[in-house]
Image 1 (cartoon, rainbow, N blue to C red):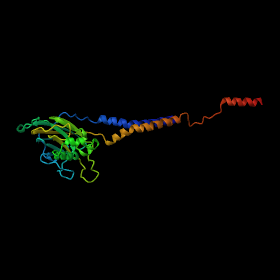
Image 2 (image 1 turned 30 degrees about the vertical axis):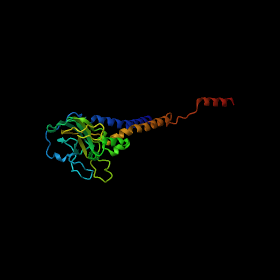
Image 3 (image 1 turned 180 degrees about the horizontal axis):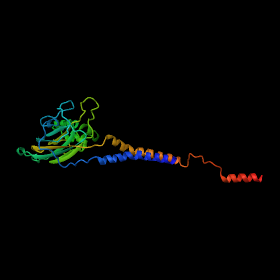
Image 4 (image 1 turned 90 degrees about the vertical axis):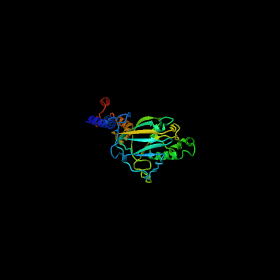
Length: 300
């Protein structure tokens, strides 16, 4: 009876350690895979009312200041496909503002072509960036100040550890595609809000994202210079709903191994200390001592 109880306890402990890992494995296998970024299956025309989900901005027209104070029109969270055609003037940039949300994968297809009326000298080649609203403000400010001094030299003089707080950065530091004429990439948003959402100074409960088509020589060292003419750009955005694992799965995965390293030695130590112990009273005198005692009595 006692051995059966110990076996049940051991099975329960082992199951408590293995079940979270098995649950994560099953969940990962059960999640449907999303299609890789290769092409945008977007209708030729946008559905009615699609302008409520995006807004176009141009640096050339000075249509860029937002600063989180409600300077932009309200837009709805993006949940369906759309396309937009833009004209990028020489030494300028355009952007599409959207509200990207978790639970969806967004695939961006950018196609650039020269404008026949103003054929660019360097070809229809530019830079593509995805950035949030805070970095868009910094990007716009750098465009305003582009003629004050050498921007690249100014950025180079800033210590590396301070650049992230002073200059604009693409989303996740990786969504920068420079010197391209056609490009496709995908992104999925993990969470909403921004670093300022908890401060209360700004109404930043939902982060805005900007898909920027850059046609000027910005302060990044690897960017493409001004094209020398007008570029026509077609932007296709394919929105696909995706299944995501709950956030607590990550915590379980991270904590499972440390917990196993703590509980495992405790279980082994406990079982080691109980080895040889029994609830039955098996105490009895040794036969050798009994015989020796009887023999002494007989001699007397």
